[in-house]
Length: 67
Length: 446
Image (cartoon, rainbow over all chains, first blue to last red; front, side, top):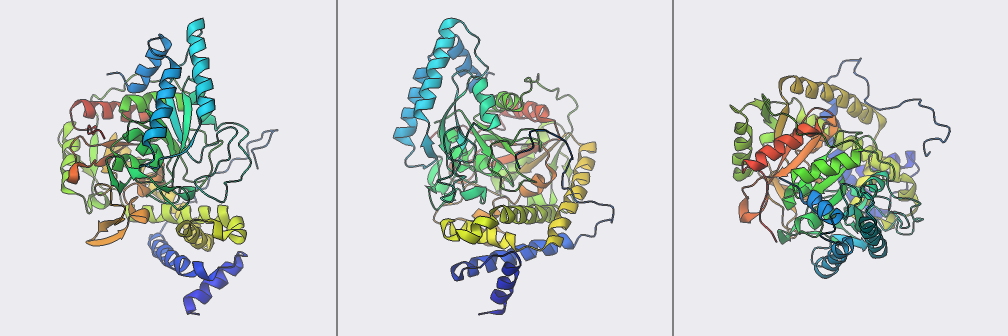
């Protein structure tokens, strides 16, 4: 087993996922691609007051919101 | 100029044509001619014919009919259709319980008189730009069946381009309306983020998901959007003094020469051509990519743990990689989204409409599914969203339109018109003006 595969299996264990052998090459390739994009994102310094754009509102509905 | 949808509705309402004839003809066309394209996954024959008969009865009784009376339409396979499982193009959900009701936007179209006739092929769980589906086949481009239709809403684009349907619905998380519209030479709209309800639409990446219509002209998009959004169709926006700029920098790379010439002509139509540089478009694309992977991976993690073998291998591996992403870059991507929105607002302080390519060139071949970036062939499935993904992140409304002048092999080329949030009417007006000037509107027919 290669080091990247070991690393992927460890990451998968953190979320309770067992990586099947047949998926490892594809997951590894996609992880490399995502790391490239992560580096791009982290290469742009942002001011501390630039908050995440996640949306949330405590709006109330007696019927709930489907979850 | 009247749109096709309005004409069908007027002729149906006046009794010039019966809805049953329209629907029977549409179903027959799909049954006899779709097999080579693989754009349809299910026909809604019984429901469609019953709805057609109800429409004809209403006309005979003198009851009011809606603005889309008798208009047949199809939906991407991720919209809830009452009584059917919503598969999202997967085998994993093939045996899901049938939907208890239609997606809200389908209900709105039906209330306006339109009639759903088919569900349409897509990339599994909307994760791709190719509509290369391991379970339902590759949707082929009606302009050249050796080429991709694009995705992930490929079935929705192909049925309109083939002339099978005048109206379809798709979803666009990273470009899944704009890419196939571009490759198939038709018109599509990704409305302002949040402008349409997503109730009854199977999610992909909740932060970025959006839905919208495909049609054969800008008037049809305008009418469909007014019905879908539950708003009155606005009168044409004034184009007097319209400030238009072409996006450069990131949005100039690797363009087909015919597309480059077409973009120049569009930018010059409204006055001396101007350009605008959106900063950090590559990082905006990266943020959209990471948010999509993380949210898609999280959504599917329970099934990836128990049924990985039921997924299309390419989709499965992408989703698994997304599920493994650490939190920090995902949060950073959301912070970058807020930063990039401010840059877009700055752009719209100086301009009213931005123009950009939708893809780098014409549809890739199915047996060679790559595009050239920086002189190297790269996967079309992963990279056709080069120019759509950065704009996705900001959530502004984008109209995808075909150039009148074809590209290599006589195939269509597509552009994006982008406006500030809520300014869809401006996009429709500009698109109509550019179409009337002979710059937009692919005319070849299959």
